[in-house]
Length: 487
Image 1 (cartoon, rainbow, N blue to C red):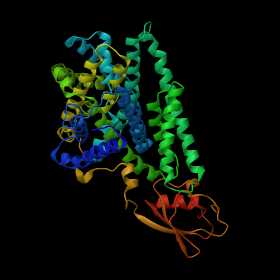
Image 2: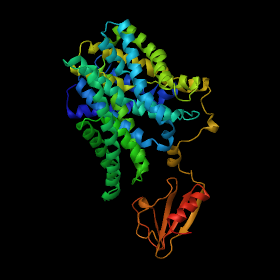
Image 3: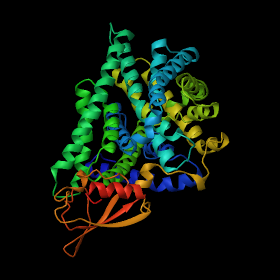
Image 4: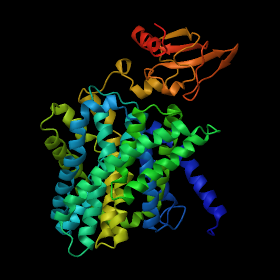
């Protein structure tokens, strides 16, 4: 088939549609959706039925970085500070020390069982050291797995925040192998520079985006998500330009926006959930195209050994050591160890040594690909069963909804109150967004001059307005009356 714009669009649309339709059947059959997307890419590739030739690691890496940027931002935008605050300590330790221990232990084991130098082995360990945010988010949230205690926010926080550490280790070790005179000591100041600048940029640029979105007053509401797409890309690029970790920045920016009063917040949640799914599909299909199954077969043996060591030894070692000073029992540590899903991110990271021309980079890439398949096949399919086996699953009738689930549901409020603003009201001319309303309260209708208005955050209230407000409790209603100056 000739490479023309029309053919590229046709093939891309066909692969996308086929993947989404097939995912419905795959879900019922218990096949992980992410594994299906990889399979579609492999079937369409040179060794598959489609015979599409794609051998461009740089293009795959670029698409992977873009996809991961939006996936991490979407995860941060979904993450409530109230949920992750109690697990900040163990989450940060898991995403740093846990990743480092996993990388080192896998690296030493790979050196022992394979024909790798210690540097090459640790590079392989670094590439597969982090849990995959896309895989964890999609399975925990879309499968609605109910977990006791704070396990779910801990796992989501870890998966969203440990990719920056794995990225840092991968880049650092690739540089160590390819650049003369570079030593591990040089990684220490680089680590603190990347993490500190990434955190500061994420918070600062996140606040800037909130201010811009709330003040810009666009004529068309549909432009707000488009604006946010550009802002997220800008956050990553600017942070990377100043030497910070762009992945950490976009994740923290998402959390910062979640904590702020931002116009059209719920629209962003729905929009970026769709974007995150699109990015996952594109990323997995692209990486599936990049892989040649005929090259993976020779490394199945060593790939299996490393995958089993990672799942049953390295990941538990990182979890147990990281949580030694936190109050988690053995069953909880076992489950956290089992949620060590590896997805497309390690495959994206494996393209860095490929592009750098590192010795044995092709072998490392194919081993990483096999490890991902093994992890998704074994762990993703059994999360719910393992949770029940360890008595950590919440029965369906008792399953708690997250704050996000509650906010996005259609009927979560338990009272509808009517409040009429007096003449010369203290909130006259103020935007709803600027009022210190409880986050779970919602003005659903405004009656003004015998006309009904469907409000949003930018709607200005006027004296004499009749407000229909949905609230959760009497104390919340009292708080609203105080804000409106009605005691």
